[in-house]
Length: 270
Image 1 (cartoon, rainbow, N blue to C red):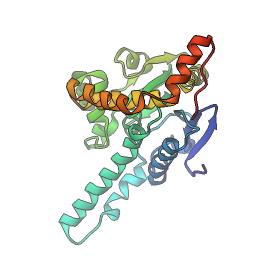
Image 2: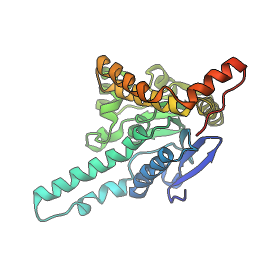
Image 3: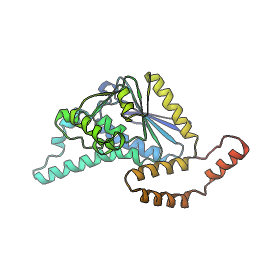
C-alpha cells in the first residue's frame, strides 16, 4: 500500500501502520483522515493481515487534528443557505467519525503503541483500538476543551467505557495532561514500557502471539467483545451462540485439536 501520510509494512501476519507526518507531530490533516480509513479497510480485507499495530513516526504519536484543516472548515461548508451549511458540517463530522470507527470495523485486532504526545484527535484514535500500550514518555490530553469545542469524533463516547465516567468527565472538562504511569493506573493503557524501543518490541511480541492464534477465533472474539460493550448480556450471549453455530465447526478447530493431541504448535490458514 502506498500512502502519502502513512507508512505501512506487513511481516509474519502483523501489519504495522505508522502515522507519517513527523514534521507536524502526526497531526491529522484531511489526507491522513482518509488514508487511515483506507489502511484499515485494506487490513480488514487482506487475509495475510492477522494483527495491526498502530504507531507514530517522530517525536509524538499524534498531536491531534491539523489546525489548518480546522481553520478551513468554514470555507469547506460554505453555502448561502444556513441550514445546508450546517448539514454539510454535520456530514463532515460523521465522516471523520467513520474514519476512526474503521478501527473497530476492522476484524483484526488493533494494538496502539503510543509514545510522546497523544493529544485531542490522537486520543479519539487510540480509544478505537483493541488495546493500548505506552512508552514512559507518553502523555495524553483531551485538548478540545482548550480550543472551545466539544470533542466530537469518539473520545466522549468511548473513553468512559475504558476508564469510567467520572475520570473521563474530569479529563474532558479540565483538559489536563495524563502521563504514562497515570494512564496505566486509569486503565487507559494496558502496560507502560521504559522506552520507545521497548514499547515497539513488546507490542510486536504481543502481536506475534495473537497472530499465531486461530484467525477465525480472533475475529469472532473481537466482534463479541465489541458487541457486548454496546448490548445487554442476554443480547451478547445470543449473538455468540449464533456466531458459533455458524463458525465453530471450522478447519481452525480441527487444526487446534490435532496440534494438541500431537503436542505441536498449530498452523492456521489466513
